[in-house]
Amino acid sequence: MKKIQMHTPLVEMDGDEMTRILWKMIKEELLLPYIDLNTEYYDLGLEYRNETDDQVTIDAAMAAKKYGVAVKCATITPNQARMKEYSLKKMYKSPNGTIRAILDGTVFRAPIVVKGIEPCVKNWKKPITLARHAYGDVYKNTEFYIDKPGKVELVYTSEDGEEKRALVQEFKAPGVAMGMHNMDASIESFARSCFNYALDTKQDVWFGAKDTISKTYDGRFKEVFQNVFEKEFKEKFQDAGLVYFYSLIDDIVARVMKAEGGFIWACKNYDGDVMSDMVSSAFGSLAMMTSVLVSPDGYYEYEAAHGTVQRHYYRHLEGKETSTNSVATIFAWSGALRKRGELDKNAELADFAQKLEKATLNTIESGKMTKDLALITTLKNAKVLNSRDFILAVRKELDKMM
Ligand code: NAP
Ligand code: MG
Image 1 (tube, helix red, strand yellow):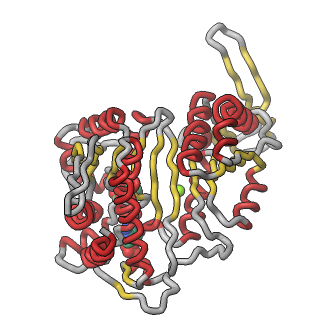
Image 2: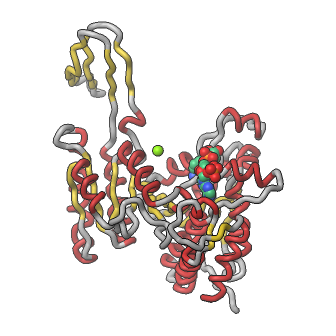
Image 3: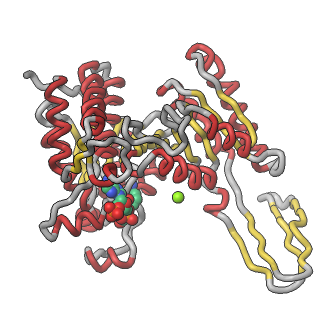
């Protein structure tokens, strides 16, 4: 069989621990036998990040800007324990944070739906994609505890000295107060990412906030979304037969529970944090969740939603067998290869991505799965495979299709 050719390199960001082990197996067993893999490789493993003072992360993000599509393995975000474990020169920032700061954009997470792993919500038939605004609000707040009577005010002083002042509360007794903000530009790029992703994946967009209570703050989110939609997307949505609709967040939550899925749920930062955990666990598992960062300029970075699965890695280092789920990492690759194929008009590559996903799902539906899924499956004949054997089982399915 002639291997599939790639015209443009894909930016490959390697990572840490158990996911680094899976990464290598996926390449060797599921990609290299079929594709003349053309990647620009960046080693984001913690050791090499330390060696390069984290320059490699910046270089990788710049490469993603240059080529437009990247695939990333899970990476360690250092903490005190990791400082010691890896003798780090400093406590580097989260690579995801660094990459997001360079590319800007919105993270879209969607469950991988497969027969045998049934959502807790019985009417959910299609994936629900969560789009989380990743800037501001309570995540960049200023807050304090008030321990005696007094008043809290919100004061704004413009550069030319104009002042706006509003009373937050007259405290007669102890309590708490908080200030937070967001930016038009950030909300605009969030809206744009959501609408572009909707056109890309042919899904409606639902957005909810609380503008009845927060008339100015949440009201601004509603306005900005509406403006961006009217100006840039209305016609494209009409042509594609898609809908954007805004409602109150509580109304949206109620509708989501009754819906069958298949839409993008745009959430403000805090709502997205909370709701993505609810949606992902209701669909089954974090190991069955895709994640893609879409920048407003049209760059894409695909990854798994879970971490480096440290506990399994330590077992692996002890020479013990592991049964780590590689599905989200396989789908990060297939997502990136499909996007590369679309952008390069390389139908063969996009078609391969489709087959890789189908082979993965067929494997699970035939009862072969890793332990995490075997614990929750409704299939009667589930067989638990170790990390490698699962990937080999996918390869068998893939061979049948190629
Ligand atoms: P984690 O890697 O997501 O794993 C937490 C637990 O979830 C595992 O111990 C395992 O449970 C289960 N799990 C997660 N993924 C699984 C998979 N693919 N297959 C089977 N089980 C899976 O989170 P963590 O252990 O808290 O974090 C480890 C490292 O990952 C940290 O250093 C953190 O900084 C990093 N991290 C990176 C990213 C990223 O790069 N995107 C995201 C989150 C965390 P059992 O042990 O019970 O089997
Ligand atoms: Mg959370």
